[in-house]
Length: 305
Ligand code: SF4
Image (cartoon, rainbow, N blue to C red; front, side):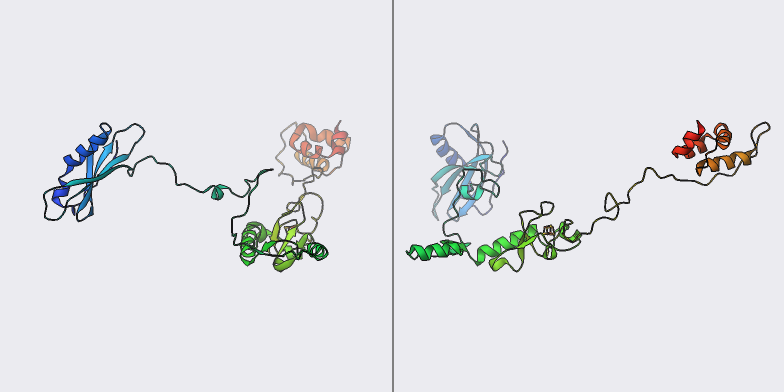
């Protein structure tokens, strides 16, 4: 069993030497489960704690602590108390967290109830019913019917959260062509937060989220349409286009073969679309590579057959 030795040089010698006394007192209470002496530490001038390994099953790293005491100018030591305490390596339960602090945003499921904390600092008193049903109904209609409303602290807390998630310092906003402030999908909030926040109403943007007016995304209503078809970032690839490469220098003709100059001219003619039976017939046997290039043109391939 691992245990950290504790020994304190400030312990009076009479207290430091009371190891057997501490062990005997412990064994009277706990006949088993007491291991080796680990050390002693001073509590004050007249008291010290002797520690022993706990060899009980399930108490890895725990220690027995026996407090002994001696009055000044005496040679008699007494035992004050003993306890089983977790040592530095003890396996102990994690710190208790109140249940209301364990619930995190997003945990609420259908049917769950979660009241705000008592005296929630985010909420302040709102409208107090007058008792006159007509007045109270009108108050409700113009938005004054709530018993509690968001106070300054609640607004600041919410604004800070929204700003961090959908504010001008986010990567999305930095890369956006323009900010929400000028976007047609931006619906400004009413009330105290009107000046800086609104809701995005674009399903391709931050739809349904409260965004800061300095936020922005690529789905801004003023984002220009891409020129041509396809991706706005890359040129479209036209797979019907023919790429024509300059002919290589003609090699000297071997005896008995077709003249090299004639072959090159025929190949160029094929590549540029001049598809006569005569030129194709000359090109095919001597320059298959060129014929392939020219063959990307439908007319040329047809002429060769
Ligand atoms: S679409 Fe983009 S720029 Fe427009 S309001 Fe929504 S998040 Fe802002």
